[in-house]
Length: 551
Image (tube, rainbow, N blue to C red; front, side, top):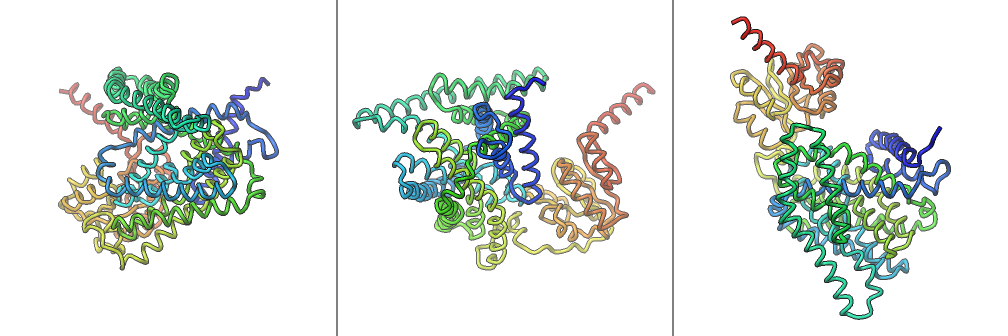
């Protein structure tokens, strides 16, 4: 059989990443840890098959471009401005303090000042992927704590993107013999960044959304998806070729410009599958570069690095938020959120190694620290949540009427019987609720605005995640007449359905689906009826057509 290094690397990388990632998920560990371990398994430092490192590195570059494009798409100037008094000073001070800790460790290990600084900076930024997953799993994205955490990481990502731009100039500083030559190097780099930024903000801000809208009007989803990828990859490549700017910054600017378009959400959805696939290969390629021998060869250095990230970084974030007069609960969440490092750390240390600023042992130390911290991060997060619950009596009360305030209170079981329970009060749930105003109904929701709307419509509202057994029990499904699961996420709907059927085998359950596979999945789990939007649209249109023909 003809063998291809590219095909072999991609197939084995994705297959092992899936296996290790699934195992990590089952162990309640972020899948990113599994992806890194998959890379270690096919790397040159472990027995067995060794993947092509050069090809893996090139695939990783595409992963970096798509990752940074995704970060740019999520960037929001408005949200950052609203958090400017918290996220901006907090992130700046945290990065300075933690970066200094890491720099001190690098100097202690005998590294040059430039390498020690880069090493320290790699500890100062957390993984956006790990943080978003942790917040989503705990339903914190729409809370004040979640917004502050995301805003904080946006500031970190911006600063790290700028750092990547200046890395080549930093690498050549050792060759500069005078202050004038140093100034020329820094000034030239800054001029390139400004020129690229101006081009993107003046020209790209108009051309890119215009192009995307034109493609959208063709009605071809395939062309729209290709347009999104062409913009991400093309701008990144052009930034590197014409301005000497890193792939990462070029892709970030492309995403940031596109984020202002009305089609940004669709662009994010269309690029997500490929972005996820190459992001996985990025983490696999990082794992391939890790030499497990560093754990035995430098245990004290690893212990010190892990202590900086898990203890020092968390303590700094907690202390800064308390100084900024934020509640203890928010400070604990922020401390747990930052107790890990990820993709930007790898990008930074990898570029530094390529430029000769650091040695191989620095990258091994960063990757080892990242793997350990990502494995421990869920434990830190859970501990922070437990501690927050115990300290709630001593922290300022959340604003009344918000999801955060409701979560801070114990669940109160409903006294309703023979009632209708609606899970989710978005467009579908809200439309249903309008027809239920004259009968007793209860809504389970975890977002502020939909929960408030449900209350205005006369519903009793339980704030929380409907997949939580305690929340479903508080809704009294045993005494309910009907359960309507209106959320679009089929897997989460399946978890709710299973628990509801266990609580009340005779309960009438209606669920929402988006495909035939989801219909089969939810039906097998016990749904009385599963409604798919496309089928219902076709049924109504057919009925209308038949009615017209009869008349």
